[in-house]
Image (tube, rainbow, N blue to C red; front, side, top):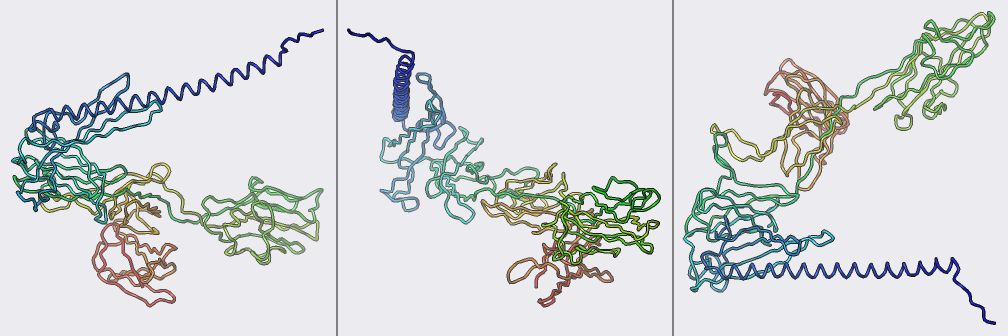
Length: 571
């Protein structure tokens, strides 16, 4: 007998899953095929647009072959947009004269004519369905009806180099001139030699040039105006039959990060035992009435008791100072103080000798306690008595420390570069880069700048210390972090930075003496090598003397102090 078996639910689910997988695979293949088809179609369309543009240009009279506001000028837009099948295509056209090397180049040209024919470049840009930019580029030439042609103009040559003078290719060069007819407004790019050659430029004294590149500084010509009466460089002049050549230097931008801080200052923790708010733990002790004593129960003091302070954890801790204690120990009583870390563990004797047995003195030095290992401390007092009628007392205890530097927000400052773009009528320099800003609410500001040497001016404060004193030398593509320690502003001040002349390293701990007539003041150089002198009189007759162990003393004379001043002294 034959048995007919139907499909179970599992069979249906498995079969459906297989069909779904096959469908999804086919759908993915279809999608990929459509993308490839659209890509091929878009590329073919872009190629056709570029080819049509080339053919159109070549059909024009030779004298009309040029771009609107370009060099040579003509009737063809430099930039245009067209849409085909819902896809937008950008069309950029470059046309320039070309000096054929067959008859010599430049000044070596046999007949002196460097505008032999015109080069045409058409770039068509579009985006794929994946939003990726694609380009089609076609090049051609257009030869004049005769053998060669002259232009009744001159040649404009723009040379672009980096900070070291090496040629920079791919830089954007914009040339504008509103005084010519038609006006010039041309954007082009330097070749592999960093050069843009533009034969056929109309004679004029008003060619404005701007050179740039993504991530680089900018260089340009400047107009003469009421302020900048001697621009450097000024607008370029093209003379008939001659080549006007000008070099512009740009390079990768750098960054200066400014941070501002208040100076290291003294701080302290203290407790006069008016209550228990500054105690974290107590056993058989009482804190009230400005004293810490053993607890009195039923008219008799406890034989022993302890009290531990809250954690002393200063922000921006720089160094620990000392513990101060004000004890009173009547006959038959005793009191010792121990120092704990922030977690309540006893600091070992290897760090603080004698701490395991405790200190009965009124002052305990913490100079050997590392702030890195021990960023927080606690004090523990142990009181004891041999008589129930007497108790030791503590009227106060405390810890001294120094803290800082502390971020100082919203400090106004100005960075001024050394490069100039001209002078005023009276000969005063006009600086290319002047940035006035603040360190903001975070006390930090990073400024993108071109390579240069930058002077610094800070408003409403004196620079009391800096690990690198201004001016700041910024190289292309580099970053500097400058930390300033600021104090109250005085009319005239001087920051002396002491360095080793052989290595350039700063010298901390040097003795620095500043004198001027009857004035004399001495300071010790910081870890950054700085020694600050404030509230000075403006003068050009200051002397700086420096000395340090292992160095030969040195003195420099005729140092000028006017406003916020800086001086580098070395051994």
